[in-house]
Length: 228
Image (cartoon, rainbow, N blue to C red; front, side):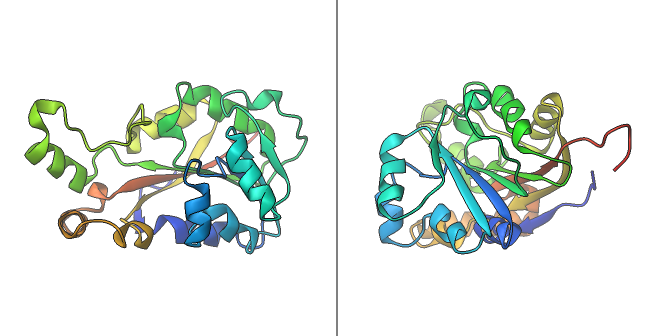
């Protein structure tokens, strides 16, 4: 894996990676915000449907899948993301998107191991997640943390990941991180974020990209017999 890291925009990075490719989108509904995201044209799965040569979606939330199906989206499947081996899909994909999922899971290792069945030697798995060392969250926590009880965290998150911890988790699941990126506070969040959050973010990433909003691991199956 290259040691050079870059600062990117998460949504644009994913869209560029999926353009013209056969794509599997895990956690595709963004439930319970599916309808809201569709209304403001910000649902990633809908955007990918116009970019990918072939798009498949998997999610556990049936209501979200029903909303997408009503919009004419096909190749939708319901599954427990920690039990992907039980899903009746015999396909491999060029790109597999696991965006903002892993921090919600009780068993992330099982999730990653389950993804392997959808990969071939040319497949790319994109994992995006919140950065454990995000500058504006650390500042908020330091100034308004109320003794550690007012953490700026999504109520459904159970973990934070960093360059080191995400790399190790991926390795333990039998995958390799080929490239690693940091992603900035994107336009989809800037439009609703308060001014002080945006200011803290911009100062943080100017100091160091390692203080950015999130991280992206681009993963591959390990080469067979040491051959790429």
